[in-house]
Image 1 (cartoon, rainbow, N blue to C red):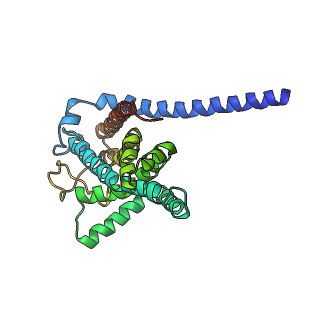
Image 2 (cartoon, rainbow, N blue to C red):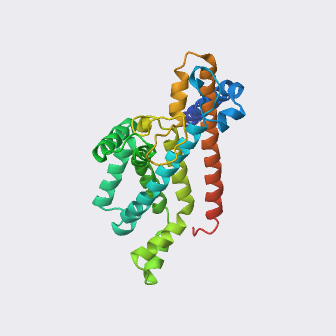
Image 3 (cartoon, rainbow, N blue to C red):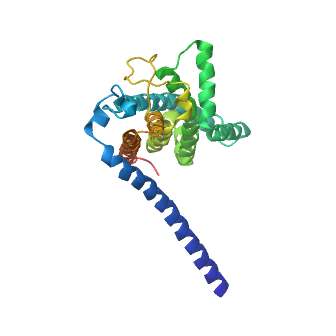
Length: 282
């Protein structure tokens, strides 16, 4: 009895410590960004592109990087969804969900999930060289799409597996084809789709390595898919490398903008997921 109580208290203390470490790390990171970024945050940072000499402390902002990040992350997420939803449905609806082929595909996507993003950047660069595409917005979208597809497929796969089996059986019993049943499943998993969008967008908007060779960098806002595009992570990297204190401070302000963008996407996804989950069958 005493031993069981000691074990329970030990693991309770362990869980509290782990929670404090994780929570403390989060507040330390966000607090550092806010503390160092707010003094350099101003209206010009979010409404202007870099002026001449921006990286040696002169006027301008990172509007080009904000728009470039939204273009690349948004385009990659939409393109990735168009590819991933059919794959996840095929694994669960047509392959039966639990046979050898379906499990092998899941393992393959798990492996792809763990591959460093620089590998996707290198592979995207090879594709661009083969098709004669220069570093551009299109190249960045293609490379980041490759990066987010495993995230989307595995997330959607897990969401589809939570749909009650009775719902699928009832659809088939009413004479629905597998495709018609898939449309019912898609309506059922809409809240999970927003979670997948959140995860993939967050990964895409904050990734540096995959766009390092593929998107290029420009002080202007791209007006076509064939023009180079700046991203916030690369802008932060370049600003932190400057010896000028003013520019280093702007790097933290840019990091704060990136955090706010992810926060807005998180809130929107949560609100939409809650809205669409009202009519779900449980």
